[in-house]
Length: 286
Image 1 (cartoon, rainbow, N blue to C red):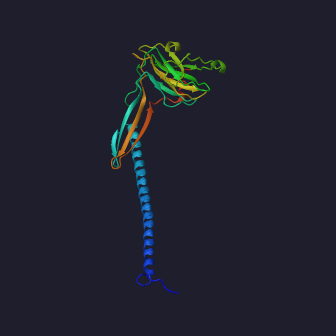
Image 2: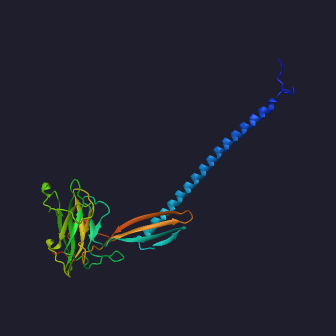
Image 3: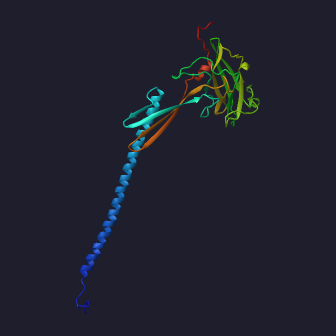
């Protein structure tokens, strides 16, 4: 058997071809390994970056919450905590002709709409504020139908008194002896389909320099509902403030992370049991 020769009569160098193939395989393996390594490193760097951002975001959010807490107790409205700056702004709830509670009120719970003003510390100023002769309460038209109990707290010649009314569009079928609401809800905020205009003289209340309104206490019955009130406007027909909303903004300048927290706080109100107990500023006479 004859060996193959090249043109010069020499046998081909098989070792040279084999070493070239091995080098190519090594280069390919190194390229794949380098690609995998770079992917792992990139993933690790991304994970570390995300973890750092989450940790910084959590810190910024905590500082924003701390700003809210500081504002609620009368502290600083702006400060720096651990390199994170926060600032708090406040807006008044109420102060116009309409006020609607932001969430539906559960059955049996009581919401208070103040008809006198509060000072900057949230203390009650027991002097006349809402002096118009009437005011409308509005609530949702729900299924099943919501009824509304209204308690009017007022001060008459130095004596605190309370008057009540209850209104239900289904009063006849339920046999509860409640009064009917108004025939339409014209003038109520959007979404509130039931209305009752309260005229103080219907409750035996005559407003003058010695007799003035303190608050409305509103309690939904049979179903939860959003509720609110609408003043008549003009002189003496504007609702006073009902509380404040605080918005705290915190930011970390090094990363540009910013977080906002908002919390609303109504003026303090008596507990629900207040409406159903005998209250006397002086002693009790049997």
